[in-house]
Image (cartoon, rainbow, N blue to C red; front, side, top):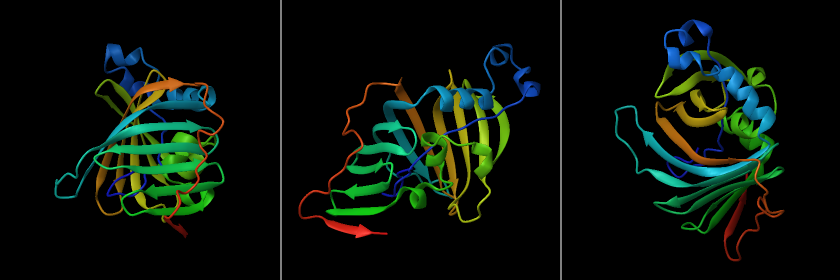
Length: 215
């Protein structure tokens, strides 16, 4: 996620059980989160949409909300473009990941595998088995969404857990608790599944005059 001017190369998944689905007649009609995630990963090879993001500290103080547009194409290609309250771009061509900060006139680049790994981005943009990298447990339905919690098996993942809410086989909200006790909430909207994307959608060339830092 992009919080505190850092990328959330971000992500989404599933799980839930019939026991708590039966608590609500309406919820019982919805597929559980694990089923919805499997449908999302298998049926949605690319997508575009919009996001809003807020980060709240351990004591409750919130940072300024961010908003922008995203796109992805499996496996590993994505674009996360913040437009408000400042511009920032995180983009991957499937091999390299670039983080471009116009205010700093700086581009940071690294290998996609190193950047994503077991991050939430692997859930949203990857095509592998979620449970290979995460312990997945169901959560009660809330806010009209089916929920799961994914905890990374790797202690060095950089975050403690990510809760994912799904509706109609699409991710709708992500709530990530990082290692510093901050919670980042990302709401996804206007998702278009399997659109026709330009060939250069995920191509990035650093602008002239900016510093390029390789990680």
